[in-house]
Length: 169
Length: 169
DNA sequence: GGAAACTGCTTTCATTTTAAAAGCAGTTGC
DNA sequence: GCAACTGCTTTTAAAATGAAAGCAGTTTCC
Image (cartoon, rainbow over all chains, first blue to last red; front, side, top):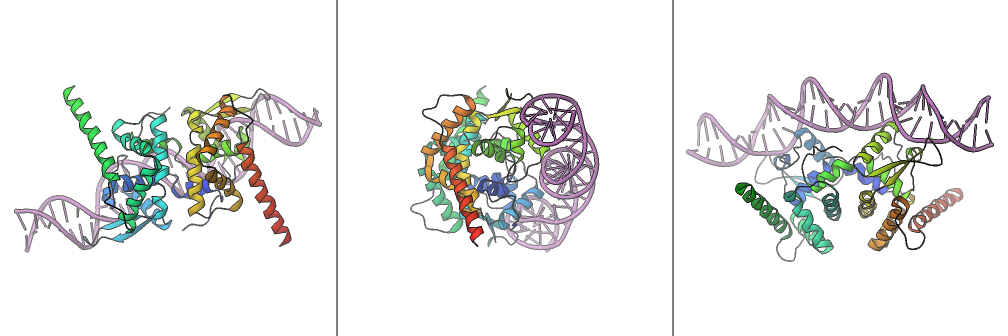
């Protein structure tokens, strides 16, 4: 952990931890894309390069934002997990997505999840956070996880519809 | 405006606009510190340098996050104003502050505002946003602005108390 | 049992960004 | 008339980023 901060302001400290162009995208892919391995994270929409990904993962682990463990199914695989700190970013992700959707030129398929998160509100966010605690921290969960699958299904529906439209056009 | 984005994901687009170590601090100082001029913004807690500040202000204006106008009281002064886009970041600021306060080594005096914002919740944020619309966009406001002054007073109270403690110690 | 594909990275090198410091052409207040 | 203030720009060094290739294993598949 680094401990020489520019100031003790909570917004500044937050930016010092994940205020760059990539960290939050990695966390996004872990939360919404269920990605847990290096090579999965390497296939981001935005095309992160491997050296940057390696650097950020290392930093995020050092900061307590992620944990890293051996994957029992493969001697070379590492599994990255969210921590409570990172799961607590879900509402911020939802707000960021809603903001981007309102003010920036988002694509329909990549913003359907943000739309559903905004519509679902804090109740949905809390359910999703509980599901992430179940998947990443092993905490008990009431019923099976469903939020991410619902978001994913909506995404795929849009993709299918747009593919159809293109085929027709 | 740049228009070559890495992806149409709303979170990514948001990061492309203000996902760096300084942009959000400039906006923070305009929102919570009522700073409107270059040299005011230069005196940030974190010590931004003048070339970076100039660069970011230019970019934020290009992105529609701020507007720049002549200050009628001084031929060399420029006044920067928030836009609706930036005022809409208030809830994100509140969440970021709350998150930082919970998980990072914040200082007491610099986090009292975040504490009050968290306690006030969406009702307070909306009132604050209306006050910012009044100050920066000239929209009508019901009653005089009070939120920022309240936050500022709490900040100064903590500073005064801590100065007293130091003097006694 | 051998080849191909996959594992999480690291290395290299060119380009871009950041940072600190000094400076500058005006403008304003006293 | 001069000192302090205005929003920057310039210079130079250091650091971060990005693209591409490579690497020492491990696993899969036939």
